[in-house]
Every structure is written in C-alpha cells, then in structure tokens.
Image 1: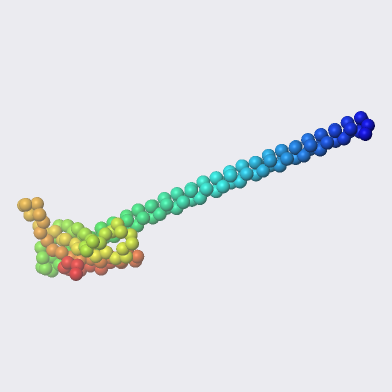
Image 2: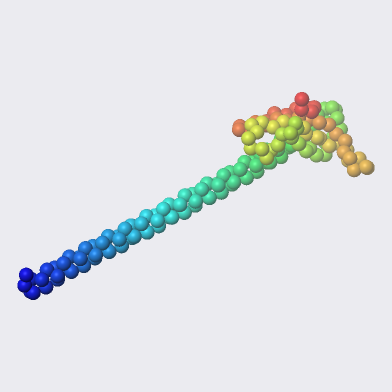
Length: 159
C-alpha cells in the first residue's frame, strides 16, 4: 500500500470516527434534552394537579362555611317562628309574655355536623329574668331537615 493510500484511509477512518462520535454526541444531547423536557412536563403537570387539588379543597371549605352559615340563619329563623308562636300563646293566655327565644340542638345534635340530615331543637322561651341570674319560661321544640331547609315547631320539649 502506498503512503498516499494509507493517508487517505487514515483520514477516511478519522472522518468516520469523528462523524460517529459527533452523531453519538448529538444523540446523547438529544436524549438529555428529551429527558429534561419530559421532566419539566411532569413537574408542570404535578404543579397543575396540586393547584387543582388546592383549589378544590378551598372550594370545599368555602362550601362548608356557606352551609354552616345557612344553618345558623335557619336556626335564627326558627327562633323567630317559635317567638311568634309563643307570643300568640301568651296572647291566648297559655303563659306569660315572652321576651326572647333560644334554640339548642338536643340528643347530641349539631348544626356543625354537615352529615346530619336533620336536627331536633329544644327552644326555651324566656318569660322572666330572675333576680338570681336564671331565667324562667317555657319550652318549645323544632326539627329541621337540612337538605330541604324545611322545619316544624311546636309547644313543649322535643320527644
């Protein structure tokens, strides 16, 4: 083999090796870029899921707060209805005039337990503020259905 042919073969081999090395380098860089892009996409997806979860939790908390506020307003409405009934009973001579009414859940009921579908109340209609700080009066009862917000009420304690 001539010197010139060896030189051409050596240059050709070097070019082939450089091309293969460059191709391998480009492939590795491409794989790294693809992996980095995939990692960024997963990170964005995870952030989006976390933001959606946080927003859903905040909506749930707001909905629960709204439901509790609605229940508290319903109790106030029940107290007003019982007061009207008690005032009528006082006018009819059933008992003395009523100054205020307060309703409280009975039998472990609660307006805060949003899983409760109904709550029974004993409502105390105050007729006298006693000198010793106690109050005298009469009991009324009420029951509310939280899914319909309908309630019933009457004279006497809850049974």
